[in-house]
Image 1: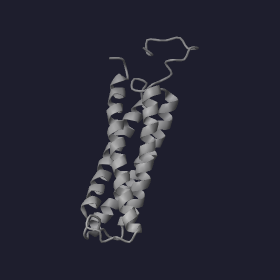
Image 2: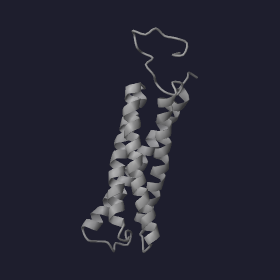
Image 3: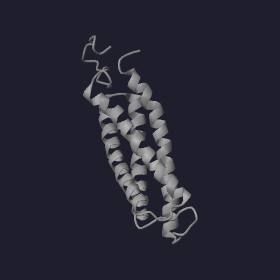
Length: 167
């Protein structure tokens, strides 16, 4: 196995799994927010409390930015260069921060209590899963920033002769 190949092999399935989780969060949060806008707070699968609307908005924003960060991650996985690593890791960190905000509102919603429907509880669970998998994704991406063993480096530079560290 060449150096750095282990992290690269882990990133592919993690990106796909994260993308699926973010799309589920987008679907559930979009449906729930649509019901809230239509004035159907008492829908059997919805429910909620005063913090629900804020949680839905941050879940949508976190889901959109998270999906965009994963698309950037797919591009980085394909090119595997330092410039794509910088873009993917910075966008992934922003997506994690927005997901952490949504997670904080999930915690507040649970503390306030009240009747929460099945879809709202499912959305809360997927936000927690999204937060944990996104931080794992950020950690794997940032491994390339601090170590040339795990990162792409400029191995394809025609001006620079190859050394034993590049192979």
